[in-house]
Image (cartoon, rainbow, N blue to C red; front, side, top):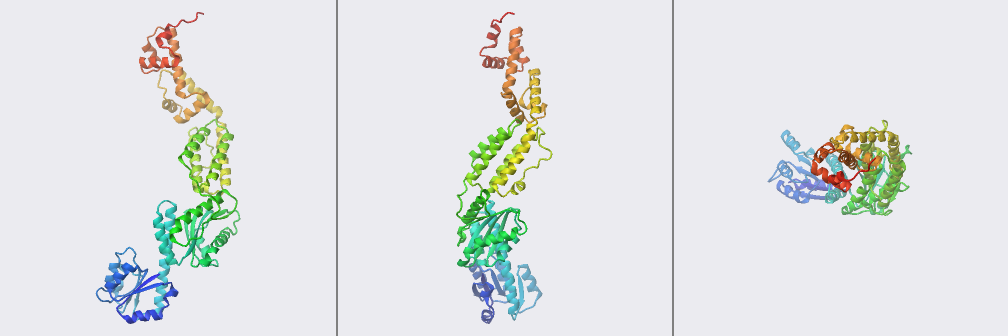
Length: 502
């Protein structure tokens, strides 16, 4: 912690040096200034966290110097000393966010108390900035450079020389309780908890001031975890621990290591995993999405088999395990396919009334991949059972659509118009039709129209233009081209073909 003392009286500097044990308060660097202008210049270069400043000084008085300091990016916490107990000075100091206003002659007991209070505020603010930076990095809202800058400042102010990062999964207490669990253990340390998701995922940086304490960090995490689970044996907590770091620059790397270890705990038995236990996470690529999107779309239809869907989910979770995918990514992918399932079954009103909608909060209750798979398969199976019972209704709907097409072949039979008529989603209708009949909907429509046109060509002397209109074709040219494409002969040649006599 850096302190700047600004007073034009040499005797005050000597007095404070003799009467106050600054190092015991956590002050490691002290600079001195003897007028207001020098105070502003030194503060800009020295960047002190604390400033003790006299009101009456040459060139610039204390208030004027503080006004200049307001322009600095790093403004020190300030204590004003004054021999004048005047209201105007106090009021102006408050406007400049001065923390303390003490009268001369200086009472060292009051001064030390004020300094301790400000140091505690500075350390708390530093922890909060570091917490925000780490949380921002995990969420993609902060850069590595921002995190390293916050760590540089915090490590110096909090007296941290060695540290480890822990990624914690499970039902956790609040961040303050987590920090307190570490800080009240035998080895003095500073803990900074960064909650990423409520009661589920926390990145925790724990630092110590001596190298010989670093090896105890892993033990501390185990003891803290035990304290959170006391009286709650059903709570599952997984901790992934990084290697020991000694520079702020290594913080992003150690954070990645701890996430990697926590992922091991998601897939394997155990509660505490320390780097380097497992292989690094491999990415879930666009090809994975394309593969499983298509597979789930095919399986999540009204006639799929539960066993086929179960096999698909087994394969997907095996892929998660092989890639050592981050648990949050796994939860997101499961939510994607749960949403897909609901969107497919809701339009047909086949979602069970008591079915629980899947949310990230529901998925995060399962801190192990095996538990999540069991839950997800059971949830999908409940949908599958209900969808299977709808098979007969599905067949009835498709038969009515077929009858509609055969009776109204001259009308608008676009997929959208028929879906609207039967109050269905057009994509759902298309899937259902293909599965029930074996051909695409529009192929079926065209075949019905060609068959009806062939009957009219063979049994009437109607012109081709009339037949085209009666069977739903755009015009005679479209009719002729389509007829020849499907039958291999033109309408004229088809009409001229000899017919067997009865």
